[in-house]
Every structure is written in C-alpha cells, then in structure tokens.
Image (cartoon, rainbow, N blue to C red; front, side):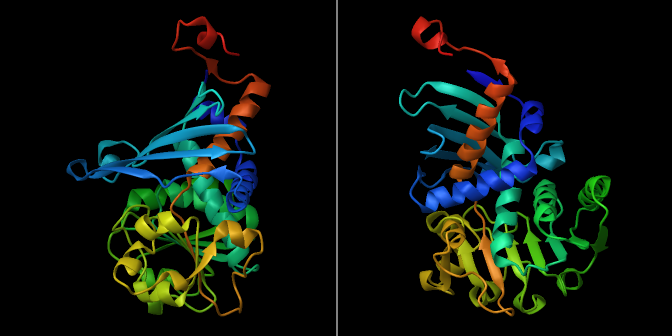
Length: 334
C-alpha cells in the first residue's frame, strides 16, 4: 500500500491538473460513470465540530475509496486547521487497500477547482473583480483556481480576522501581480464585484439580497452542513441556482435552510454542475442574471483526484510503500 504525504501530493498535483480532473469528475457523475452515496455526518456539538465519511467509486479510474474529514470551527484557536482529512483508496474488485493519502491539501485543491469550474460556466467571461467573504485557507484556493481561468485585476477581502486577511493577501502577492483590497464594510466589498466567493462557517446569512448587483456570480462554498447559511434566502431565490449534487445540497448546502423554511422549492434549482457542463441546460441566460453555485463537496471529486495522484505517484516512484498484514497474499500485492 502506498502512503502519500502532503509534501508528496504537492509535487504531484497542480491547480491546472485539479481543474481538469474535477471538471471530468463532474461530467462522469452526470453520465452515471461513478457511484456516490451522500456523505454521512457524525455531529459532535460538544466539540464544536463534526466528522464526515465520504465514499465513492469511479468507473473511469477503477478505484473506490472513502474520505474521512472533519470540520472543527474552534481548531484555529488551538493552532490547528479547521479541516483535516485522510483519503483511503481501494481496488473495487477485491477491496484491497491501494493507498492512503493526506486529504487536507487535496480537499482544498479540488474545492477550489470546483468553484472555478462553476464560474467558468456561470460567470461573465470578462469577470475581473472578485470579492471574498472570508479569507481562510479555502478562500486562497478559490482565488488560486479562479486566477487560472479569469483575467482578474482586483481581489477584495472582507473578514473579521485580521491575521487571516494578512496571510491571504501575502500568499496571493507572493505569486500574482494583482491588486488586493481589504474592506471593513461588507456591502462596500461586494459592490460592483463580478464574482463573489463565500467561505465562512456561518449559520446566519451574511450576504443580503440588495448588496448583490445584477449579473453577479456567487460561489457559495461555506455551507456544507445542516443549518449553515451564508446568503440571504431572498438572494438565493432570485438567483439561477446550480448545485454540485441535489441531495447533498438540499440537506447541507446553501439551499438547505431556504428549502427547510419553504422559501424556495426544488423547482427553483436549475440543475447540477455536471449536467450544465454537458450542455443539458443553460446557466446564465441573460447578462443581468445572478447565478449561484452551491458547493457541498463531493466524494467523486476526492476519488477522482486521489486516483489521478495515486497513478502518477506509482509512475514517478513517489511515496512510501507500507503493509499492515503478514498474510502473504495480501502483504505482497504490488
């Protein structure tokens, strides 16, 4: 079995590769070329967190697996990441474990890529100003992915955490020649933005309907568990809504609370990103449309990315080979 650390995966997986792998994963899922039950939650409110088990199977890669990932909102106060993950890959025919991958970097990369792929199909092609509500790790990866697709000239940040904003800005400045502006007023940050990215753990709407101009695209990334909500329900209702997966989004995405409160219905949802990529329906119909991508994070993205990394690592001889077993017919599997 191959063990791949974050350092290994950073050598093996670029954002350009993530964009391609993730877009293909969405198409494969829409075509029925992968299997994925909804993620399972182990809620631990006494620790201000939860665990999620995310299994999937890719026909294309002939690999099955599961990601075990947490979300603990108070971890940064302890010097720990809010999100940490491990990905286990298996041979689907025999169930033999093939690899264990550090999953946090992989998760950040595929989530950033998913947002950029959605914007590719939903935002205006000449979008140049992006506003970030929240400036943590995922905001950085969303920015990194968007900068690979759009000719952005300005990034705007709104966050109550000064250190987070400073880190975000420095990491972007180290790699890109682009204007970055820090806003103390959220409405001012959003005014005139072509793309808005929300990456907070909020359970209370932060972005209100009258702060978003016609023609804006929104990537709603933060709401990934029941009860979370970053956008005003009226804003959600007036948007053309695209989800990564309808079932997951309905119980744990940005649309979960508006649906629960009967402020929107399933008829308000245009469809999945995979079907949009395949051209089964149109995303932005007119220039003034407000478009919304509700991203909950799909196991098919993790398995597709993990399988790609695993196969590339095998070819390049990267990673450590380990065995848990003494039984020869398992321990000696190449």
